[in-house]
Length: 251
Ligand code: PEP
Image (tube, rainbow, N blue to C red; front, side, top):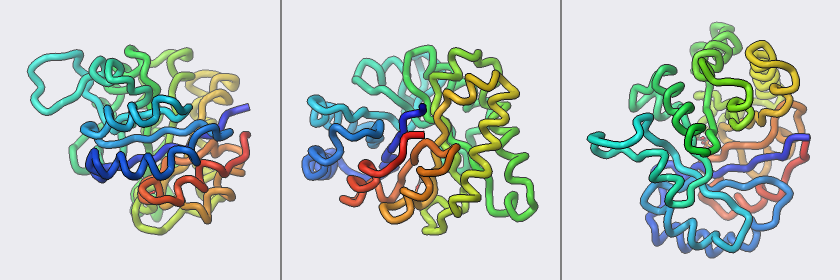
């Protein structure tokens, strides 16, 4: 039985004061859900959000980290800084990081290892472009990303990870993948994890779907056998997020 995850990636939205106002408005509704809930604010709003959610079961994540331990890396944030601040999870390999900040699978693999080393739950993103999908190569693309991102990561560490399948063409576009399209790729990811590890490990790893998820489409997506919740962008900034948190069938 995999517990459904609902995670709000705020991206570069919400000042600390806006975060305070929003969390105060939704806090009661997102606490105590059957689903495991993560709020993932920009770094600067993390301390405020952690203190506001202190008396709830909602966890706070970060959107990125650097793979080095510490040192002369101006502008970067280390895993130790995140855990010391009370952060429990970290998004790694989001398509926006891959595209705008040139993160490749080698960098993502190093970040994944660093997050695991520090006890952070990685939310590893993968996803294909529209071009790759139209060429009929989506599954092949995702399998390659998973293989490279998990390179050198052992079975027990892999079990600590959450994977988010996020087709790039569905992110922030309003074009949600159909539940069948999302399920097909999430099933392929589980197959790949079975090959890399074993069936039991693959069955224990949560795989989320992300890409224009909202309160209206989440129930159908979360009900699929291989979709264990959602990584939510735009709808995670709105009051409808509370409805997404309350939706879901543990599978
Ligand atoms: C995301 O950025 O992870 C995402 C899924 O965004 P949206 O829900 O806005 O498509």
